[in-house]
Length: 89
Image (cartoon, rainbow, N blue to C red):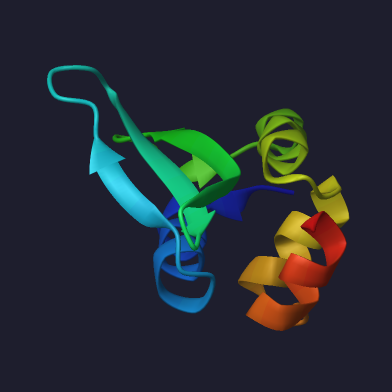
């Protein structure tokens, strides 16, 4: 099962409050979450990606401090920001 890259980007920046930083000339955008100046989590997504396969979703989950299933739950609105922060803090 593939995850739509656009849906993940929107969830990270919209619902979870990650900031997106372009990497200049590189092909990836970097997403990071800081709360009161303290780094919480980060990941990066290939700028041209349309779908993200399961193995990459698992790697993104490890970077975000959650499981592959929880990444899908984050995108599908079964995990909200307070629940996510409870998982990683």
